[in-house]
Length: 196
Ligand SMILES: [Zn+2]
Image (tube, rainbow, N blue to C red; front, side, top):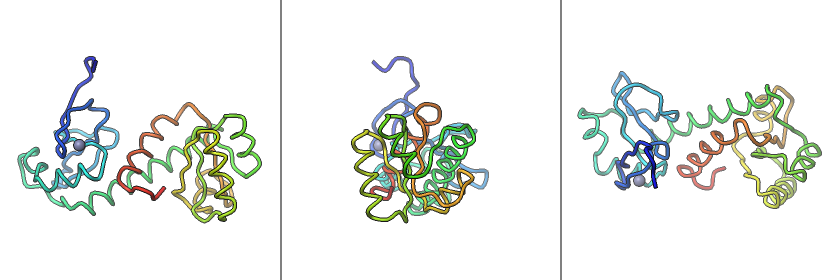
């Protein structure tokens, strides 16, 4: 049962899926292919599964110019991927800041460890420059708690995002921003496997 959800086909593998499960692209006014993470930008859209492999297929089959019925500038996989990386990174930062402002973020080893044990963590961010020992400790705790562990930012950035000094671990509470945040993290993983 797909209900009445609008369906679209992936320009890469051709699979038909719910629009919301695909990644939308539009043409910018300059004619550049632009990822539209929120699926809100105006104009005609082209869709792919949010996977690097489907992007590669769509480029190889020249499906973007065919879809937009015009030559498309900048259809280079690396360029599109770096655009996706930049967009998602900025949006993840935005979610962390918003959650911090809403009082839904906890930082510091002890506070985070306690929250993990209490099942009160939606996503756990660990700094890319966290010590090996701490990384292993929190990876194990997150694993036990079934919590997604993300290493996208260093201590300085994590601290800045929540308006504090350097932070090695930052936990975002469940609920609220967690569902859209997880979706973007999943897309990030699909494109940049093993980097977070
Ligand atoms: Zn696909």
